[in-house]
Amino acid sequence: MMNEHCLRKIDVAVIDYHMPRMNGCVLAAYLKARYPELKIVLRSGAPDLSQDEMMSVDGFISKSDGIGALLSKITEFGQIDPARPTRFALESDAFIEALN
Image (tube, rainbow, N blue to C red):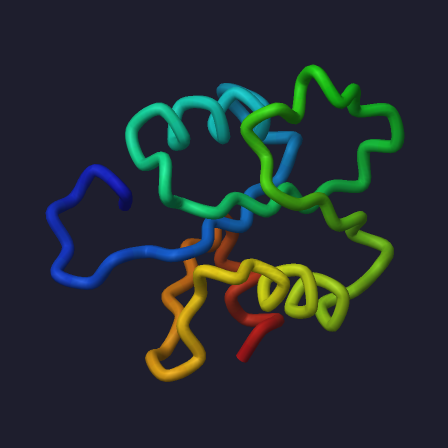
């Protein structure tokens, strides 16, 4: 999705730690190297992630904290302009349905 030449800029990526081919911290590092302005929120139920592993992550929300906590974390990013809609990149269709 990020590699496609989309007309709209993605402001925030919400990613899970546990994924089939790589973990969310590896994906965060990959995305930050290519899109340094992108804000990344790691949303996970993993209890023991190290700070060193999460160096490319801008925010962490436990899955047990719910959607409200996730949305609050996203709005903490000062660069997000409230005058224009924020674009979200979500890694899971189930999560997209939960936000609607």
